[in-house]
Length: 252
Length: 272
Image (cartoon, rainbow over all chains, first blue to last red; front, top):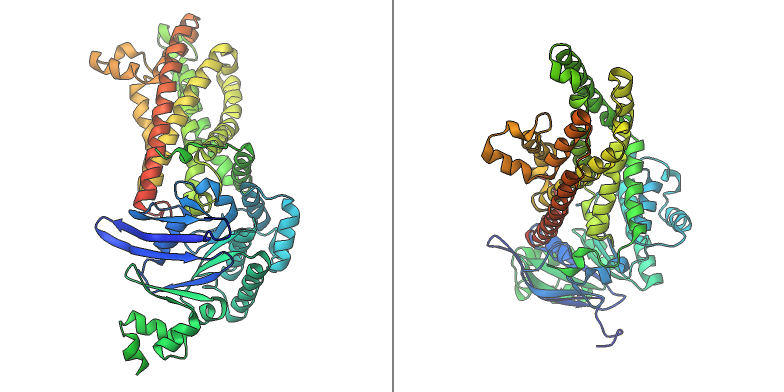
């Protein structure tokens, strides 16, 4: 397969079992380079485990997952410098200033012209005035922006986002979404976004994968999903899927 | 074993990034720095005065001045070396930063090297002032051990790193549920490595256990040097050989535990 046809992320019959509990039960999907996809699902649907397997933090029980052609977690060091993530399950060290944190991660990712990159990201994410403040002293929204800055430091080709706007007020969340859209457009990055915010997914994503109990329950464009379920919002579609209503029933 | 875990394409630049991260943390917090100096000072003073008292009453200790202070200073190298390694690792867990690190291009071997460097930095901050206090209070000059001190230090720090690496593996695999191991595991070495008494004091069967541990050779060597003024190169050679085996075993265990952490999904969830 040539580089152009290689999917940015490919999951093939991905299974993760923890002591008899099947967290992910045979998930398959392929994300085209430059695409932005929403991963939806209720609590315990398997979204975080799927993302953790894509990041190489969790070894699949069976099946395979590859990122930019490298199988995870086996070949992760071939591609980790080309991807990044933001998740509510991790924090940036609180006792370091924002600048110190970003410069440490920039060095870890082999970023060139670190000071310049930090200044440009800080300007972009409205962090300039906080650069020399302790990360732990920032508000939840400011911390989310710092994590987002960290996730963009290395200009990743693959960006994994887990609830990126969860702790932000509507105005800031909207502003962050526009930054993400711009980043994706300018860099041609592939973005996989796990979110509970349906309007966010509707606005940002050209494709939506809905997970339930470890399975992919549906996978389509937002417009097609709305049409098939006969609904006006993705939230209604999500509720139909979560409550086990069939498309034909939902459409009545 | 997953070959990628062993640290191919090693980068000193990434090691430097991690050392910088720990240095920023250390210098931002005076309680952390005070903690490095406080306990070694208390230990040295307590054992020093005890030695002064005993030496005034027994002929042997009058001749063997400095044995207790030497023991406590070398024990602190062993104990503080491991603690310095493990605390830096624990800081990542307390900060919920391990996911960021494991997801970055940092190789496990680079991570371990940065922890080793920080263990020396932390040890130096604590031990160098205390060694001068020992001269001031008791006239015991650790630095006068010369070549012996270098051999003792190398062997003790290697053991402390091996134990630290093993504990880091346990923490990756079991989360903060294994935290107490970081604080207490080295105390198992305290009676077995004969820090304050000769190996001959132990029952015969326990002496075999003692001689299987590298620090035992160091403490025996220190007593030979302080009491008999003889540097036992043979003991240091044996300690080094055992340390190489211990270090290799601990590294293997770390990579196996890391691999197991990936299977069990414990790398992202690092709480209890």
